[in-house]
Image (cartoon, rainbow, N blue to C red):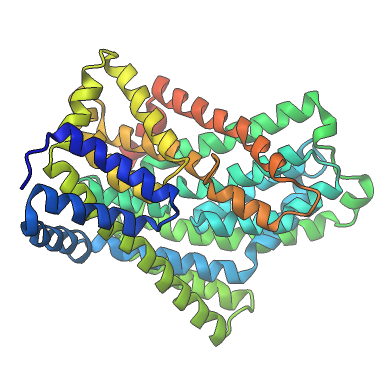
Length: 444
């Protein structure tokens, strides 16, 4: 309708997005509202059929999305089993005798919980309630304690089954199973780097993570510890193998595997004696709320991206990045930096749905492997939970932390782990086989 240059419209859409978020409006309404406003500016009322077509195509014709409520339901059921409590008690006695052993245990349990549930809020809150009081009582440094809980909890967004990877699959032609296989290496790498950092730090500064006393370790015999191990570790491993194994060896599609996971989680609820009709009702209700929230954001982002690309915004961003003269790797650094900065202010789902349609064509043009690039984005998106001012993991953690743990401790505690994530990305650049090995091995 109006002759406005694509450059001006692109800048205006980005400014509108930031203003809406800083004013505290829900992301779905900011994205949807901007889509309508700029759609009318660009095309007039003809934009509304485009919205209907894109939203219907994204949400109604994409059967991969069925896996999302099933994985969420699986996570909510597992949260009811109290399995994390048994895991922590077991790891407390297995690794507590080491310097920094409790922190090492938190990282390992968080990885297991991530592979079982994949919901960041549940992992961080649970580990904060279980482990933080114990670490504070044991004389652990507050910054180290909060850092390992926040960073370990965010592993669930990378280690499969990850809802983020399911959403990534819907934006590309790469299957969920291939993304799951590719993410395993980086997820285990980051877990190993976190553990290595804790061990080295506490070796040189043992006062930051003292071992448990002999009396505390002697409270549980070796026989009791073996029973605890099998009772707490074997069931979640059974679930992980049932879900991921069925996908990786080609027995089930991700959607079918999600259904298997939900069934196995329900069986575990019975196994631990935690089943009740009330808890099942609450799990179903919470699953419906979480799924609705996520899919509403998808609907708003679909309209936003449709308008943004339609007015030429994708070409504007692509031309801007490619004319900076930074070369292939310099442009990659800029794209990762943009994702990192957006993660301070926007939810990971919004970044994913807005950023991938813009950055993927640029990555393809530069010659980057699409699977490798997607996993690199997935790695850096972990920082969106850790970086202030809107890092969700930080608020989950502070809301459940003891009084002696300040918000300053939480903020300072995550700094080393943000750098470790960047180191993990550098290692994936230097050794791309970390990402590519498992998909090639299982023939994906």
